[in-house]
Length: 90
Image (cartoon, rainbow, N blue to C red; front, side, top):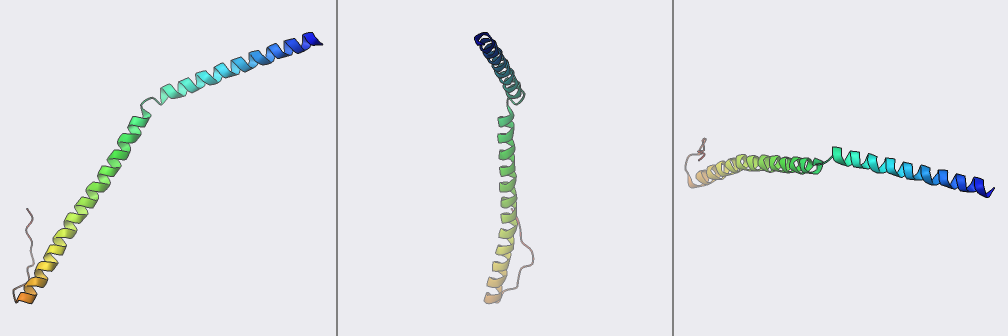
């Protein structure tokens, strides 16, 4: 009976070692395939942020021109001047 238990223990340990080795090799393969992936993701996030900031700045510039035109028209109306219909951009 003890001989059977020893053989069973040896087989169990051998199976566990083989399974652990397989798992380690699988993890190493996955890591090797994804090497540098974090850098690509960081660059993607930075590009999205730059695009959002650019869109906000472009929107603010358009809104700024509209606000300046409205204020100029309002001031000219109060002062008796003619309303301007065109604005100049630098």
